[in-house]
Image: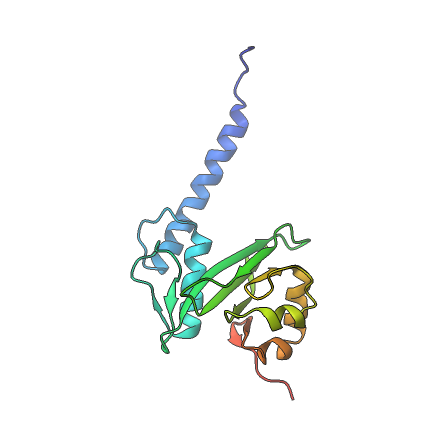
Length: 178
């Protein structure tokens, strides 16, 4: 095997980028009151924003299984996020009903900007039908795509009537349309 010279310029570029990222990450973690955390900051932030929106209580253990927070009505909520670049979604998401979890919140990022949050009830059957889904196991699984988001974003009333909560920037619950 032939020895190769390191790409010193690339190594320096990567280290400089990490040096620029570090204080911003530390500031975000400080706002979340987490001090030191090695968890994904988008996951942490997503849990905190959903918790603030529902006026809930974060789970006592940040890495426990199942739920991430409880609502004032004692509903348990699992929080996940979906991040994509702005030009096209390269990632989609499987929303799942989980045992012992009353709601499933999905925070949507487009180029690191929150474009919305959708919180689903455990029975996904009617929601899948309203979105025209054809995949199996629609009772407890929803294959969430960009097209589904656009449908919900453009008119949340049909899914809202099925128990889905939708927040759009500036992250207030969407008001009913007349």
